[in-house]
Length: 121
Image (cartoon, rainbow, N blue to C red; front, top):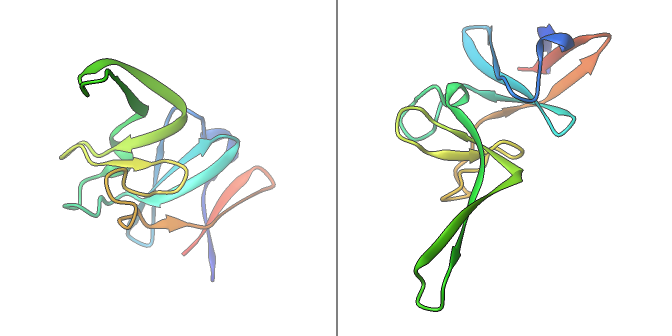
């Protein structure tokens, strides 16, 4: 597969998604847990710009014996993209939909070398 230059490595951070266009396709790219991940910026639900949505940790709910919610906590080890159109959540590490792991974002293979980031299209 041919590689396409996306951006400089220095353009990436753990907190901000960079949106790049390659051959007419928008790709969201972010540094996550030391790796670089890249996804097509299209939500499989209804085509929203998923990579431009909120990035937040997984929400964990603690319940009592009667299944009433007591409190919510955040699990920083599992970050999510939240599509800005309808709130669908996807695991940043794998692209899996939180509600149904069979639904996934399109992920691209990324190579980082010589201070630049490339993606296979």
